[in-house]
Image (cartoon, rainbow, N blue to C red; front, side):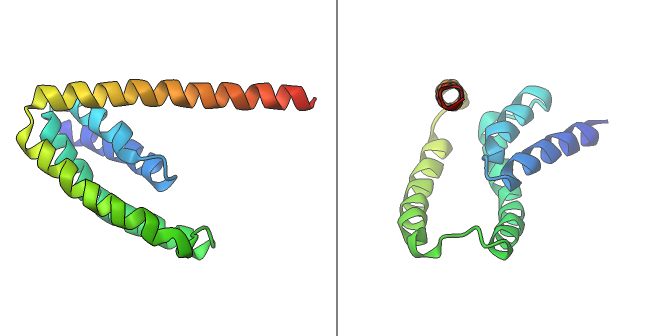
Length: 128
């Protein structure tokens, strides 16, 4: 039965990751809440599942001409540096600190997404 829950979590994370929305934003809470996985283990599982998922999504986006390659280094280089720093922090911080900081991140993310959606809705009404 547990494999079904893990598969559903992987499905949901894969859908969001494939759309470029950050599958880990959903996968990590799903694994910790519904599967009882510790935060640091969920983060590792997310990273491991992200590799094949991102390669496939990258190939599809490239095929559809959705990549701007001339600005890629400005994203990749800092992302690599800070991913190393982040993984070092995750390795040494207690699970409670990781859980709390990720929760705060998700709350801030939800408020910014809500604000952006609301702002777009107001713009669309103004055009009418």
